[in-house]
Length: 294
Ligand SMILES: C[S@@+](CC[C@H](N)C(=O)[O-])C[C@H]1O[C@@H](n2cnc3c(N)ncnc32)[C@H](O)[C@@H]1O
Image (cartoon, rainbow, N blue to C red; front, side, top):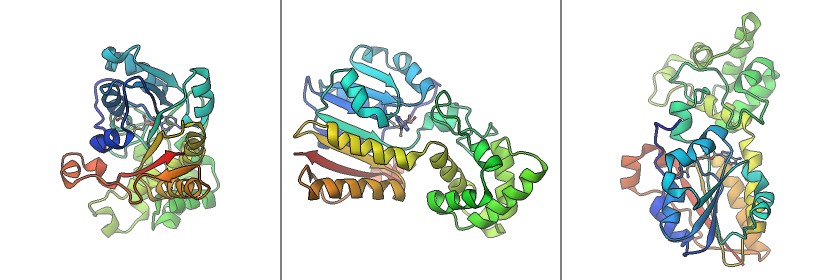
């Protein structure tokens, strides 16, 4: 997994709002290739980095030999944030979540995150602890449940048609690869939808990935834990890429601000500049929210 790169989004904004100081502890809950972590360490702060994907976590020392001993890498889910901080004796001065998946997942994981590659339908961030694969969902879950996932997590307007096509296909043979699923989607949607700029499989793939990894439940638990474990005066930054995640973060922050445990640092969501979007198109849907523990 070490030959691809993931460009960190909103990097300048993250460093400006996190404002790490030498000697402080910052928890990066979504370490990945360490793009944000490396910039945080450059300020003199120390980083406790949590990464759920065992392959990415294991490759970190090879990717960043200069950060070995400075960034503490933990292969776990950020939903265990409080236990992880306790285990390492860390009271965080700042916490960062950069949600979703990275270029490493699309390009080199071999786990079917991209509809442009012919790979097994897996989509798990952590195949060691999570038994639910995308293949299992499309082949074994009730079709009504599949339709609900596509509608709620993917906002897919042809959810019913795609779920019906999957139901038909799996009666003959299980869908095992990304190509099997893409063909099924293409057979279900109208021609105009197949020929748009946005690939017709985009929303289905996003929805399945969210379901496979219980991403919305994780965000809810992880961000709530971060609000509890953060030191007074410490800042919590969350970058989200989907409306549903952003809504969860907004509600948790609103409640914390209302009950007096935190204050908004900026009321408005921070978005990437035009310049960033033009050089890193993946950043276009990024939304950064920031709150400070009181
Ligand atoms: C968008 S990437 C982060 C990129 C990183 N900030 C950088 O600049 O290199 C998100 C990472 O979070 C990881 N991840 C997803 N869910 C997680 C969870 N519940 N706990 C810990 N890591 C998670 C993914 O495996 C992925 O590597």
